Image (tube, rainbow, N blue to C red):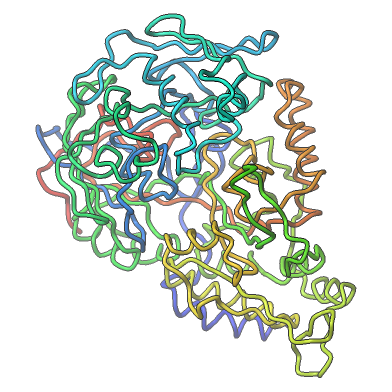
Amino acid sequence: MNKSTKTLALAGVTLLSVAALAACGSKSSSTGGDSSAAKAELSFPAEVTHDGTAIKDGEFKYAIVSPAASTGLMIDELTNNVNDSTFGSMVDISMFGYDGDRKLNDSGLAKVDFDTDAKKMTVSLTGKDYKWSDGQPFTIDDYLFTIEKMADKGYTGVRFDDKFTNIVGMDEFVAGTADKISGIEKVDDYTAVLTVKEMEPSMMYAGGSVPAYILPKHIFKDIPVADWEKSEYARATTKIVGMGPYKVKEVVNGESVTFEPNEYYFKGKPKVGLKMDIVSPDTIVSEMKAGHYDVADMPADQLDSYKELSNVTLLGKLESAYEYLSFNFGKYDEATKKNVMDSNAKMNDVKLRQAMAYALDTKTAGEKLYNGLYHPATSLIISYFGDLHDSEMEGFAYSPEKAKELLDEAGYKDVDGDGIREGKDGKAFKISLAARKRTEANEALVQQYIAWWKEVGLNVELYTGRTIELNSFYDMVQANDANIDAYLGGWSTGYDPMPNMWGPTNKFNMSRFVSDENTKLLEAIGSIESFDEKKNLENYKKWQENAFNEAFAIPLFESEGVIAVNKRVKNWDTYYGSASKASDAHWENVELTADKGIAE
């Protein structure tokens, strides 16, 4: 595509979004002892403390900005989308806390000590008088119970993964040849020792290779694991019991949850009530302008429409997430618990995949559609992870000429001269693409992708003819719908850099791609050798290079998040492990200075 043609195509796209300019506002650096990721140059500051005297018994209004409803699940063991997880994080928290570098520390319900030589992890509660939100004692038994039940054959979630199977004796327990997990030793009511097959560097990170889920044993011991998803103790009901800062008070199914402070919260009872609503990206600007909500993650594509609001302060953060393009390579085998590739999958040709990547001008799209807050991602290990990200990688920089060359080499040629390439067999060739429904800017972006692919001769069409509602999209992709050849997904990395998502047994590897080299390099990253910083960097670099070469997933964007904070809110920031994110918030410190949100 020549320059004038590309500009014309994007002009139509830009009209669909409010924003058409590059990022504005002065750059400021996040500080405050946070990780190297949070110290990156951001477009907005990382913290704010508004003036004013705190009121008592106020209700905090939190907007979950999303075009999709919640499914109602609220326990970590079963949630698999961000809406459910955000609601659930108010009642269901993990065992461990972490510092600004995302490494586990003693700020949570428990701490963990590692003995790499003996391959043992000692998990110890950080207090002896912790209680569930119903007042029942919380002990190490709840933690061990959860590990055992996650291994139950009736478990229907996607969280039972390598962190569990790495425990000695887990395989035998799952197979039914042992009635207990030999690698688990309860020392007392507050301490347990887990013996593992391999020590892994990701054990040091939040969300890494140490099991961290907890369920109230006194409740779930009477509920068959296969029935968890239907249980009122796993869903948004007033009966759900957790260790988080809040309890459920009222629910509007799929849309809203009103919470009340948990008097037993181990960090201290929150000073404010809380109401969380799902709010459309199309209306969030007007809602924030009217003062209806106290905090919201704002759409980057609409920055021009809210950057001058006087009733909010805008904060920034480097997102621990990326957008990507991937492909349908096979199926997940429930019997073997492994991803299995289909040798006849349409997208098996690596040159075809690479060509699709080179055809996309993500730099221009990020600038024009997202105010420069979306940046081209060059690797599946994003810059959020600091030195582990290979900053020397150029990734799939826009090159339609390279794309065409690769397609020619692979045998995809325009046989009949209509500008669209046929398959290697000379017959019509179409790629069916699934994309999730999000914002107007995203709708425009997807159409621009299709236009760019057409420019290099590829016929790419949206599966169902339109973008797909979020929950339905992931149901289809995870089930490897045979009608889908490629899909545009998003991945929240969490705080652990280990890219297990793309492993041979991980259910979140929805592409089902498996290769000996990828598996070998993932194992190297997870090996005890990688506890050495130099070796760890080397292993991560090799994995990133191979991921680029095999092109099983194409990184598209990483981004800066923009958080609008109403000026009645005291003590809010975007440092990791702090009040920037619902699941991490120090809710015991959050206060309000007025009965109602301040309007523009």
